[in-house]
Image (cartoon, rainbow, N blue to C red; front, side):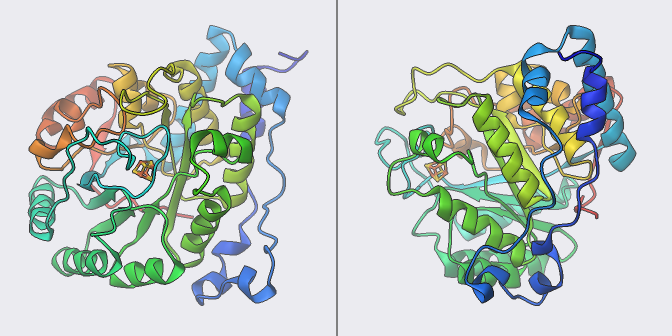
Length: 382
Ligand code: SF4
């Protein structure tokens, strides 16, 4: 810790309001892609990240217990200013565990021959949405691998049918990398939001996590396309993935600052036993919580989940995430029989308070820390 600078001072600095992002302005609303028009990357940077590498190190590695408590309290207050004591609930529907990709960290990777594969039919998806709607959910998150069978036409039709049945609900997709045209069709069919973690913004680290056929550049381009098409866009990282150090996290924060996403998903890296990273150690709970708090202060209005990975790493992880500034929880609304096969990592929590059947338990757990579930759509507000 440098002289005269406390965790509080750092957090106050981190909480400065960003300038607006050109990519979310009128050109984007008109469907134009400024980068394409100009033939180069547009100037989207909202000023430099208001945090130095030294300050990041202090926050992640050098805070005392008291300073950490102060950081979490500031992040909590910031979240409460924007969202009160309500925690938005999203119904998470894992629609397919087939994937054409081979990310080294993920149990759904195509080379995992031991995984029992499934894909939900449209009827199953609609049934799950109906049950979730009756339970009070007003956001459905359709997540899956990049499944060639559930292609652009199939997803478009599925989104359209959900939109017709539930015009007042938000539809979030998390289905990986696709062309601008595909994203456009899904948006027009009724999708409101899209989650696509960048995983790491540092090229060498990206190569450590992915095979050569996957590209950080393409991943970033997808995120910019989503923003330009008017999706509420989410990105994020795994904390403690193999090869990640402070420099990689700093580059992630710089990229997020440039992107100004409406949602940020971070959770600890957790190894999966059928992947090349099976022997790696999990990410740190402390670092994940401190990063959550820092993200809340850097991005006061962002929709920030306390992720299932956090709840898997630590039984109290979800509540600790909320007490560090998170404001979203995503209970699983998938058919119970399929959940064990959506094996992103080992030990994934998908029952109890992590599931639609466990809403009463979730409500009680939130009440114990002074929060309540919010069943509103919970859109991002500028
Ligand atoms: S992380 Fe996503 S893209 Fe990569 S293998 Fe898993 S499901 Fe596929």
